[in-house]
Image 1: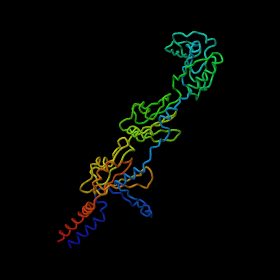
Image 2 (image 1 turned 45 degrees about the vertical axis):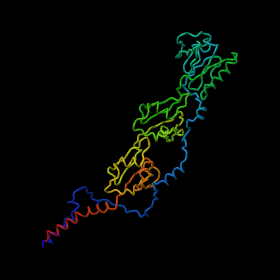
Image 3 (image 1 turned 90 degrees about the vertical axis):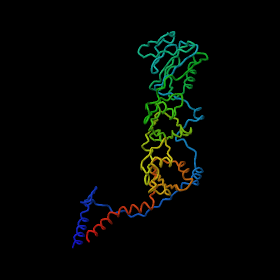
Length: 398
């Protein structure tokens, strides 16, 4: 009788286990579960991390390619700054100070009639109806006329008139003015230089100390120059994935490789309107899961993190439950839904060296497999409480 009573009690308790059992529970009676899709299990090849793998990678390595135009000795030699609206030019006509000695006006505005014969004054000039610019005085005592490229892309110069200079270099402007002055002056000698760079700039944003707009000058401006002018990168900046957006398309530049190896194929030459963004390292992480002492996510240091770094950062393998023969690296989160799987056997003597050579990529997942003995012990842990309950029930029924 006692045995039947206990058995009935256990049966009733099992029927209301959802109510009596502790812990969270979601009632699924009101949920319409979809039918499981019928699909065949896809198999993925596993690449063994051994000496042969590194030899194959070295043989298949291809030189880095510049995503845009990069600064090289050849591109530096062909670089030319071309004038735009708002730029300032300082013009000197040697032996003719009456042309450039203190008649600077703003925005390409022509000087007043009859002003060409006025001798240069030692201080700033006053011109009716225009904001004057103080003349530039050279070491030889000659004055310089400073003019600004007007909105229509032209400047005005005495005895030459208004000429279009937008898109020209300083040398081309010098040649055009020389040709114009040759009609009234014998063998004119001119010096033309850009004294104000106002028409072209790039935007530098992101994890930098002082993000700002940087002007493009007659010296080539590269992505590394722009970052340095912005005060340099912050400690959590991801220099491996610096973006250069041009014409609506973002190109990735590995500035970390440029700093570490001096790779010239990463020093992109910037153009007007480019946007340089330096992201943080939130997307440059790897995940260490499985039988490790401290499962975690680790940020990459300047885009670099080896398999040895990842396992060390997670407290190494759990010696009680981890199987050192099956250390996996699963890759491909940002590319396709088909992962690339790599396996390292840490029981081999050369594995300790190879794991320091295996470079991880952003969003790689490092997984340490559980050993067979640990799985068996965990199964026993699950059924032990049930066996104990049955044992005590039988003892009580006697």
